[in-house]
Image (tube, rainbow, N blue to C red; front, side, top):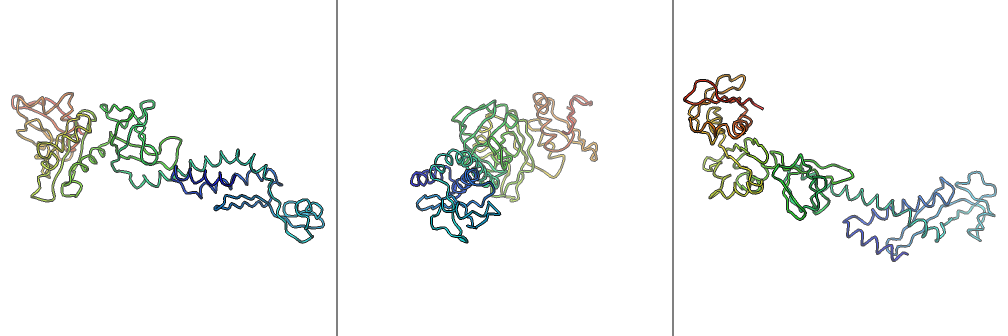
Length: 353
């Protein structure tokens, strides 16, 4: 039994990446539970485990007395002779749990306790590893899809991407490699402890940081992101180095950088815009691909602006189902009212969301 115990602990410890002490602690707890049923309830039970040989001894210590007043701590001389033929009054003797009881009952009881402790230890390991990584980009392989929840295998543990944290274009199957943003790490739970997201603006920001060294190094800054997942994203950027073009840095040579991001977003279009501290210029840029003629600040207090665009770019400025002006308003935080040169009245108004 000793040899098998040591072998099992070493194997499980290696497989699960958990300290052997966790297993020994679980075994000790299990043996105390078993012994408490064998000895008088409440007795002072001791467990000794030789971690070199795997030997286990479970016993309680009692004082040999003439008349027993506390059966939990004392034993009569005649009774003590059953366990130690040399026992005398005043001696302390150890009463050991029989080997057959130890082997038969303890193994069954220990299994549940050990598995519970291992489960808790694994959860703590996952929590300790990934909590500091909250807010970062990670990747893993899809192990399964359960009720539209995408479960991703990681080096340690699993991450879950619920449907609400996925883009409409995110369709994954088992074996796919997936990048995701760690939104939250839970200390415990029945399922995966890591909540991932591909829906949040932060996911796009981290993708940009991964693809663009200037962003990772802090030379180019992301002012803001507005996004309609699966449809379109607008990113406003600026540079703290006048020699670095922020838009060019994001787009990359021949558009290779922004194309990599678009590919990861399953074809979602990305507009990269230069941020400007002039509201007029910033609003004009944000409405791309619409061609702006004039931006008039109507009410600074309410952040309302009237924008005149060319006749042939009015539809582009609005966008399909109003998505372009909606994202421009989110990005600039201005309520944008569109007009064109042919009309004096408003054609389209998008309130700030």
